[in-house]
Length: 101
Picture 1 (cartoon, one colour):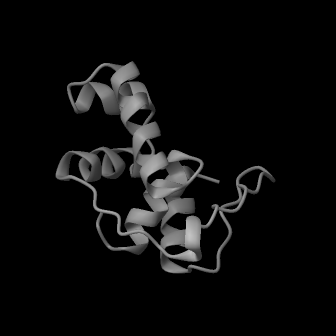
Picture 2: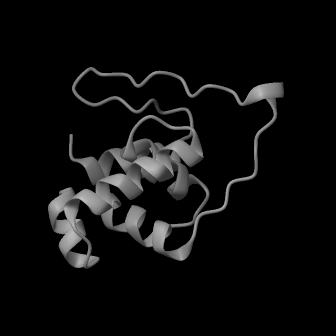
Picture 3: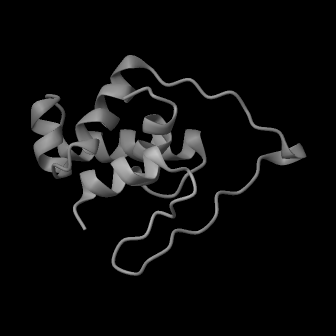
């Protein structure tokens, strides 16, 4: 299944699991105390997620955003950590569900 199609489906239906080639991501851990911590992403972080949502590779996204591929991957990891998700696709779906991208 195409990455962009997977993101659109998951964004439109919160009950849709993020399944690709039979791999189901592990559940996101609940923060201490069971409370959702407020998360705010910068415009640059949202632009990066929007670029990834198009389905391009990290190398292409890095070129378009005028970053090195290593910097882009490091920023993606930081975004994933901030959101408490495991993969960049989960971060993209999170942003799409929040209608940020």
